[in-house]
Length: 214
Ligand code: ATP
Image (cartoon, rainbow, N blue to C red; front, side, top):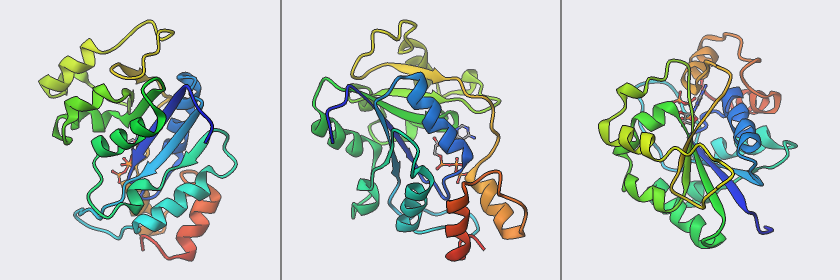
């Protein structure tokens, strides 16, 4: 890969990747003037209350299908192929070592992930490795953040974005509201409701072909 000055990283379960993820990735790239955005599907199996889920390889395949032909977006398979729990801190350490100290790294999260940031492994060390962009879902309320996260959120926001640092800052990403989640999509697929407006056509084709989420 050629050297980049600003690289966006977007981790998620992507179970499945949907319209809001794609819009987030594109708005992230445009708004922060990133040379590239890597989508990083989480690898480890995880437990949820109910419903069927796709395997890590299937989630990666859907990400690859969804971004084919979209400029500047790439799939990064490292967490899917890692045979131990994949923590964001480890992924960021690896990528920082690969790109060197001068490239601005931006890790993208949603507002709900910001609300649980204090539960992430070594979360305060993330800021030494990357900047964090937060895509706010409708209804985001910063007064409900954990106090330690709220302090970081208030102190690390910069108004002068032209001074892009390799790591350490936080930035809200303004997105037009798109109130969709993978949970809702899985439910709609189970009940046979229409999902065509929420998924890209190749992803929906893959879901049907592999009989996912039924
Ligand atoms: P699930 O419903 O299974 O929890 P999800 O739709 O939230 O899934 P994830 O793969 O967990 O999808 O999302 C990856 C990241 O994208 C998370 O940080 C999440 O907060 C964010 N995100 C997903 N959908 C939206 C949305 N509509 N608006 C803003 N952020 C979103």
